[in-house]
Length: 212
Image (tube, rainbow, N blue to C red; front, side, top):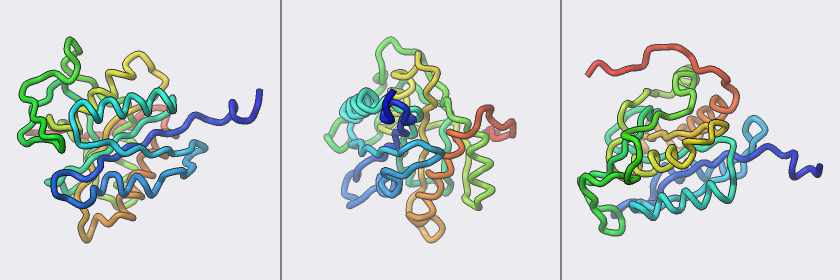
């Protein structure tokens, strides 16, 4: 067996490109800072996804087929949030309040026709939450990834990997850049998430639900 075959499978890390009139998107900027990094023995490979229904799903599918990763972490921007949001649930629904970058605005359309109503993340979210907070980074477990392109990608990811129990996968929403959340902080948060997901066998059991 040669060395290339013994090499651990990579980590696929995705972020979205710019949306609407924005010149940049912190999700892909933070992700790119980790491109080719080695975390817990696994090389990180970054792919940019377009903010477009359908097109983003196909770009993700191609990356999964090409890389056959050990771990997949997709990220996006949540402009109204003030913490790193570890998404728990992807729902089978596209319901766009605004158009995507291609002008598409699906309303009440399933991400995957005939697919189940929802999928849960397979990442150790509670352990990731604890690790982020221990590092002084505000974080939360979120119960909704919305119904825009982020949820579209999250659901498509989990549906694609539904029979591959050996690959952990999920979605993280990043807050916008601010005094507290600089790009180095977001990069550090993603590194912590990846390292924790690769090194945690059983998730932590701590409360992180929502009252309302």
